[in-house]
Length: 322
Image (cartoon, rainbow, N blue to C red; front, side, top):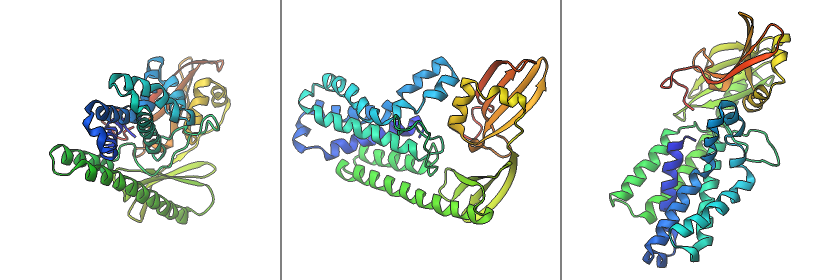
């Protein structure tokens, strides 16, 4: 999920923490603010690893949504953050409560990240595999809208915190469940079209009734869209040849990291001045007939890697959005 959504849901989780707290705590405003801060901090803590961007795109790809979203850090972030929050809000007597709401924020963050197409390494150290439920977009306007409207209703005194915040999270989980059911139904539509041979996966769009899909065969990726139950095939990407030039880049650290993240990649190779260029593109982030997200590797005439670039080949305002 995107940063703005994590921040907003952290705020509404803080409202839920205050709504469900013991009424006796209400007389201690600093403790209430501490609970609010704990929920917000926990809801955003796993993305503190974004600081790795300063080491470059390759390091960011390798580490973002990795260890910071792992099983140990579900408790690790609360252990790190709770003493600081208790100190700032003079709430040492409520350390356990602060710890639990910080953990609730961390778990909510990882849960939301799990269900989009980007994925998360949430089962480290048991597994370093990327898991993605492919049920919600990175930015979900419905979930964001729920929480923004609910927060405003509370701020303007239209609804009490004890009503609006439990209702918000009940609606959120129900909606995610609805999208999971839709995901299974739409996947069935794709498999009915192409049969059991190959592998099919979906790309969630902003609206629940709209999905992208990719069906993988031995040699191609067939991409299209679904609106309701109407499936439309739009383009075909060939996986690309595996020649000596392509094989020469497969052992580099950057490419291994990219392939572990992307899983299904379109590969192209071309001769350039003084060498070759190999392009790897993640088919999950298709827009029309373009694959804007991926990695370019240059090699000299002796097939030695001379450089690489990683990221988006599009304007910032152009879809798809990550």
